[in-house]
Image (cartoon, rainbow, N blue to C red; front, side, top):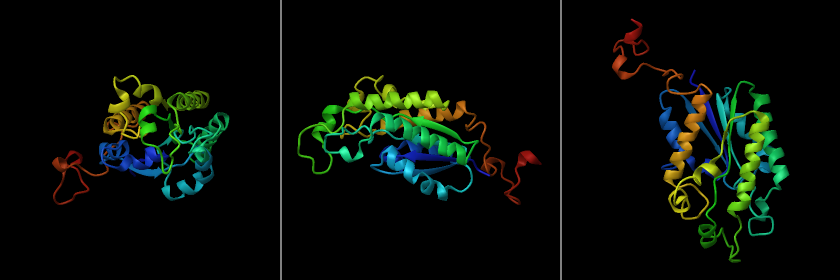
Length: 237
């Protein structure tokens, strides 16, 4: 049976199956060896994600080999600005992340949970392209505060003993990351940013024993196909 990898998160995950998205790249990478299941919810924070977690996972079916948990961009919305509805206090964010990880592990003890921090924010880009009907001219999110949530995510991972992809720090290691690795809105990943995340996820999966080398293909490759019995590989004869 093909391994299952579930992507659970906010808009960074929901949009990941779009053109150039990290989820689409992951599905292509494992196209002959694993199923990638999308559970992305635009606008959600960890408070809402925790409350809908069981419902979101009900349709998954068999226990997944791995689940990525990618929240924090909305939790980090400033408490007194336009997107305050999405804001979650930092301590609660950590508690929610911990509870999400614990709930997944209780449901599927052998499943590997991989935490992903929110990516950085380009403050100026976000200011120029405010959300919805926001005409205040004031930022609804800021990179420095998002960094606090990223650090909290790293802390949860370290305390829980689960793998972590510190995307907030990683993206900022690149020159001109504000415009090359983020979209025009200053919030979401560009194609290049998505590629970096895809490569990081593949690397973490490989560390946990999940790779093209360890996942067998579910059916013989064309070069090894027995024309009279496609379930049989020439190498098995």
